[in-house]
Every structure is written in structure tokens, then in C-alpha cells.
Length: 352
Image (cartoon, rainbow, N blue to C red):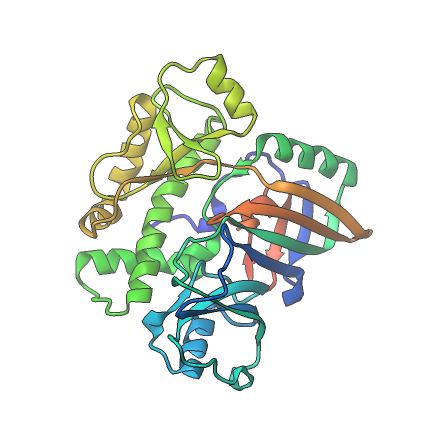
């Protein structure tokens, strides 16, 4: 249906400066969640800080629920993490006053690092962000040119695409979303339904962003722009693009935004709205299905500015990247602006 594999959306700079291999080992892709609040240590929900390897978050949630004897719906986690990585993330279980089970019965690849209590379940998206440490191996390229590019990324950010893992192998989640919306393939699993809805939304957003990367407006404010506040879901429609707004954009206080499609109309106006409507019309099956599913129209920043980006050469062919990203953003979209990489863990290239 798409005609485009997810990792083929355009970069801001071509050709990439480096060639490299990513996730040669699971520990080459380390992710650690950051919570926006402090856990109280008391309550009916048992919270576990887990180090996982070789499993995705849903598989860990199922294993924890089975070990604790609680229904899957009573297990919470904030964000889906890839199995081709080493990740540290939080899970919650509704245990009431029952004691914690013996976690030594958990499958290999799950290590309990910390246990505490809290009054509420961990909800999807309840993160302030994630910290990453990535290692690129067999790197070829010019270190001096990379240093200049990294500085540009610090100043300008990168396009805030949804990563390829959002769409399934070869973009198969989009096909499944279209089949679900058409009624040809009923989807009983709540988890799978959520995956397909998210994939459909992500495709429309990425297509809007790709067009704005192509016309170099992804990090600029246009007439009719809906502006997102940094680190927030709050947005407003910009009126006249004046010096104050341009200054806030330069300080990374605000960002241009694209649509997370749902019922109703996007908040954008003018030429921005016309572009978003064109993309939604191209993917009418997905846009109509998302509206019928009752999802609200929301906004997402087009620009992603990494926090505390550090680049270190471990040797002549090995590169370490350390940085923080807001919740819901993808490390691979930063990497693809620096390198044409082969993702050994998933087998996917950044560019076909």
C-alpha cells in the first residue's frame, strides 16, 4: 500500500557522512527510561525496574504477569522497547497487599534491578524521556566532517520521524492496519490493534514530514503553522511569524508540528493545512479508519533536538553516541542523519 519502505524517507543531508554497522551486539544499543515523577514506595502497585535483553516489552509484561499471577491488563509499562537491544525500563503490577513472587522464575533475559511500590499503574507514555548509549562498529568516514555535522545537529536537530520498527518488517503493519479498517481482517487482540492504529498514524505523520524535509521547511515556521512547545503535547496556531517566534524556535523552545491523525480536523491552517490534507487524501483508508476508531487529532514536533549529544571515537573504526531524547522519539532517526548503517540486530538498512 505504501510503495515506500519506512527507512526510505529523506534525510536532510546527502550522502551520509559515515558507513557503519549498528547493534552488532545487544549491548551496542543501550536504552534507559527516565520517569517524570518520584515513586512513593507505598501503594497497591508493585513497580519493577527491569534490565531486559532479547525480549520486547510486551513479552516481558506477559512473563511478569504470569510469574505474579495477575492478568495482563494489570501489568503496565510506559513504552515499547525493541528486543534487539539492552534496555532498562519500568513495569508495574497490581498486586494489592500480596507479597512479591520469586522473580528467579522469570525467563532468561529479564533481570530485576529494583522493586518498589506506588499508588498508580504505569501508563503508556508516562516518561520524560530516554537515555541512549549506542555503539557503531566498522565505521568508515571522515571524523572532521562528522564533528561539523554533529554540531549542526545540536543546533538544528533532525527530522522527528517515527522509526522503522514502528511499521513492522517491510512495513507490514500498514497493510494490516488497512485490512483491519476495511473489515476484511478482524483484530481481536487489543495489543495488535493498538500497534496497527499507531502504525497508520505514524505513516501519515512521516509522509507530511518527508515533504517538509524535501522543501527544507521541517525546521522553519510557515504561515498556518501549529507550533508544539518543547517537551510537551501543548500546541498553538502561530499567527504572524515574528521575531519573537523565530527566537523561540532558535532556542528550541518551540517546534513546527505535524498531524497525529484522528477524528475532526487538524489545527493547522493555510499552506500547512493544505499539505496535511493532501497526504491524508493519499492515505484515505488509513485517515478514515483512524477517525472512525475515535482517535483525537493531536500534534507531534517535526523537529527532534537531542539532549547532551556526545560523540566519542573508541578506536579508528568504533564510535560511541550518548544522548537523551523525549519520550516517543527514536534514536535511529538521529543515527541515520550521521551514517548509512546496517542494523545487524534487525537486518534492516537505513537506506535501501
